[in-house]
Figure 1 (cartoon, protein in one colour):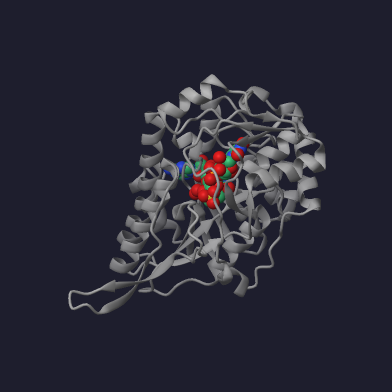
Figure 2 (cartoon, helix red, strand yellow):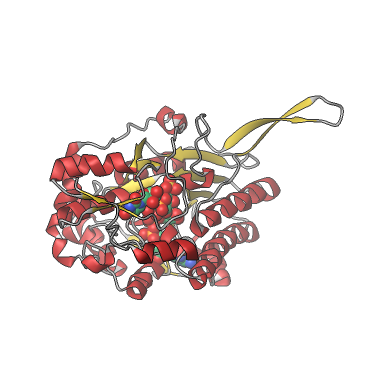
Length: 406
Ligand code: NAD
Ligand code: USQ
């Protein structure tokens, strides 16, 4: 297949591009490199030393003989350029990773809120619009988030995208319908993913576009089979307070002897998936496209759930790290349960990698190897969800009232 990987220079996009190229697909990365610019804006860098995208693809060619092409296009702004690109390249499938994906970054200031909404909603809409306009019947696979469902405890499992409901008619009968599970975003970033869902629903219904939406949990780990092939194919690894995600952050914190930064009581339960499984799920989704006229195909792309404080305690036991219970900069439920259905990927043959010693050790090893690149002052998460929360966090940035020894 000829596959366009939008956002293929990013944390999930890069190993996905390598995996698909390894399987013999003709891979074309489309990226505006905005994530690299955001590193510059924030004054941070990936824990792992990343080469330029051109250099990465050159090394891949040298190691495997396979070519990955790179195209510099801003999907949110360069609609005409992208449309012409589609006409020229005619991909069979498009994987869409190209969005601003950090919740804390999306909540930093009004400018960051605007940027996230403009970038994410425009990028998604431009891709859909261009597909209709060019008449290209490419299967669109989008990386969405488990966060569209929200994290309230309701005592029921979260279904894969759709909820059967009974609606009382004017005559008092009940009609049954299947609706998108009610969206309940917890940040501006997560809200853009909820808006994406409506765009997909409309274009699948109105224009018969074939769309798969993957509601993915938090991705952890760094290496995949292909990124291990050469030092310069290494994946990016975010550890800073805006882009670092919780489990990867705890692992690097343990490696640099920094107390694990648990927000609040750490009672938040979240869904997780290893980077290798994420890449594999995308391949499974590509191989099982919906038909034109079908509703959007939605998968929950996660393999296990964990409570944040349990993760911190597990890593503290393994590594001797201390735990700091910090004032939570986010507005979120202090404690929640989470049960998620993910039967579709399991039925397609996914054999989940679960959180286990070997893989955790591997990440700690990567973290130790590159610890010299860490700027400790960039570890705290300082982006607050509201002005009132900002005041609380500012008063006690180190969590001195809450700190405990792990
Ligand atoms: P990332 O920030 O590392 O990669 C995103 C890539 O998209 C970057 O290379 C960036 O330069 C590019 N991009 C952004 N806006 C663009 C635009 N307008 N035009 C062209 N390129 C653009 O993010 P990631 O961690 O690889 O996540 C990829 C996708 O998966 C995101 O959509 C994210 O919401 C989703 N996701 C990620 C996780 C996770 O834990 N990392 C979990 C669930 C879902
Ligand atoms: N948390 C801590 N300490 C930290 C960092 C985070 O306790 O140092 C807590 C947060 O308060 C939150 C939970 O851990 O309760 C998860 O935070 P996160 O930063 O790991 O994940 P999140 O902001 O939800 O976003 C990440 C990705 C996003 C993706 C989402 C999937 O950045 O792109 O959509 O995970 S999900 O969480 O399933 O919505």
